[in-house]
Each structure stands twice: as C-alpha cells, then as structure tokens.
Length: 205
Image (cartoon, rainbow, N blue to C red; front, side):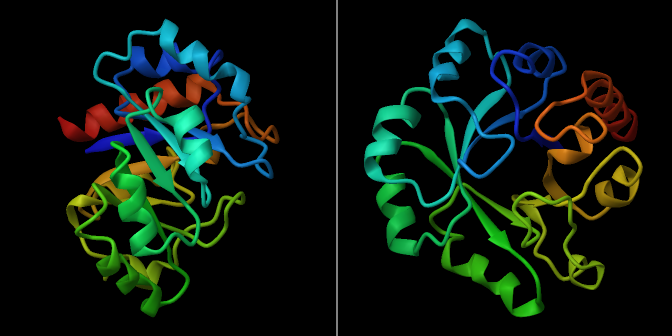
C-alpha cells in the first residue's frame, strides 16, 4: 500500500516525509484552502532529494498557463480536483505529466464517473465531496468502490481508523487533516506522520 500525504508545506514537512518513504507528497494550489502553497516556495522543492517519493501538485481546474509556469518540471503528478472533462484531462496529459483524477463521491451514481477517466488518468482517487473539511465517503458506498492498483481513497483517514481502511483493498490512501496539529489547519504534526507510517509498516508485516 502506498501513502499520499496532502497539504504539505515545502519548507516544514518535505524532509520528514522523504525520510519516512512517503510515496506521494501532495502540495495544494487552491487559494481558498488553508493548505494553499505559496508559489514562491515551489523552488524550495528542488533542494531536496526526493528518493522514492513523488511530488504531486493538487489543482482545481488549472489553466494551461498555470501548469506550464508552475507545475511542469517541478511535479511528477498533477491531481485534478475540479470539473475537468475527459477532453481537458487528455489535453493536460499531453503536456507530459502524470494524472491523478479525483472523483467526488456523495451517492452511488458518482462512483461510475471514474469510467470516463480510467483510460486517461494514471490513478483514480475517490474522495468525499468536502474540499476542506475532514469528511469520509459514506460507508455504505466504500464496499462498492472499484479496487485495484489504479484506485485510491481519501477522506477522514487517520491513525485511529487505518486498520479498517487498510483492509478495503486500495492501492493507496490519501491523508491530510488527519495528520495535522489539533485545531490548526495546514500545519502537519510530524509525530502523527511518524506514528501513522509506523502503523502502516506494522500492517504490512
């Protein structure tokens, strides 16, 4: 199982995640988010040796200009959280970057939207409809989500429920608020990150 930690700060959090072999390191580019990345800090990422980690830019309906100016050459993946059509995703893919397409799931019919992107995106991430609140996908829908190497799950995952989520059969799990300091959005708690990764390693063994 691979882990993605989202909403990281380029100066505070990256080295910790690299040292813990976190597979996907996510950086949010969304002005309304308390986890929004300062564009001036993108160059900081080049100071690290990512080793086995992969940088992911998390965007909402990004323009070509934004992608070309800030994303290409700095990130291996772009995670699309907007209402990007299949044609738009194809267009972005042709720019030479790997795609993670987020599918927001509130009811059963939302699940099948993944079929529109399955042949284009490198990974499909099922997430709750809440952009900033820690909210999970309804539990009655979890069992019918498609599983396998191409699919991941996000939404209110933390140390307390990781055993349950790890048994669902997803290739990767995406965390953000569950690894933050209490009542302090956007600030990752490095002890929580370490404890979580240690728990994941225990479950693997």
